[in-house]
Image (cartoon, rainbow, N blue to C red; front, side, top):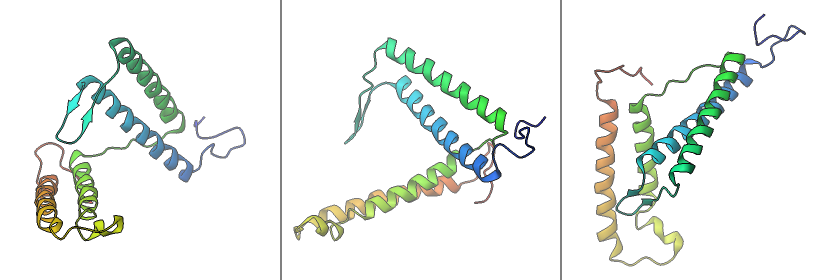
Length: 157
């Protein structure tokens, strides 16, 4: 008997419910991956952002164990309900990230900062060109995300 079917002969989950569950579980798995990668990488010291992985080896091991258990349960749900497997291409992730950051940066230009109070006349000469330059670098990331790849070319959007 199909695991999607109950004794009453209707699906346990309809198509929209399956899609919703697939999306939620894939987002959860994505965040678990990020936690695992950051935990393994250790502390990060950036220019204006710092991440301190404040877990001792025992807590890191426990985190790995719990993440494995969660992934096992996700696998059970995927198999039980025949949930779709989501494949995300790094290039598409880069593109959406670049678009998001571009929007955030342009919202910090001097003219937009007026919503928080008076803005110095000197600010636009310093801040806006720097934000534009960062924006141009983000455009480079966007171009990279659309460049042909030798490994598993991404389908058209």
